[in-house]
Image 1 (cartoon, rainbow, N blue to C red):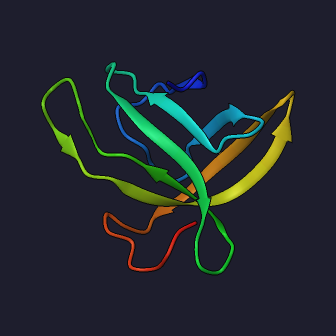
Image 2 (cartoon, one colour; image 1 turned 30 degrees about the vertical axis):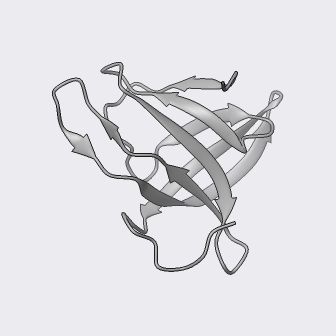
Length: 99
């Protein structure tokens, strides 16, 4: 079970969205405005860039959202948390390796 939970005021992720994650955001639960949930991991792509892997989920309206990998445009520590600004989605099926 994951102890880190982040709530966002949107039903989907989008470029530019800011997430205040735990200081060590390797794995956390994201709860969207409509109450749907997704498991999220901060990993690195083949070049070492941080990316956010967001597991697939179903919205409360029944829309299926496939797993996606998002670039991280900015990452900065803030008040014991890590603030991430999302870049663009580079998947649903990212061809390169992630670690």
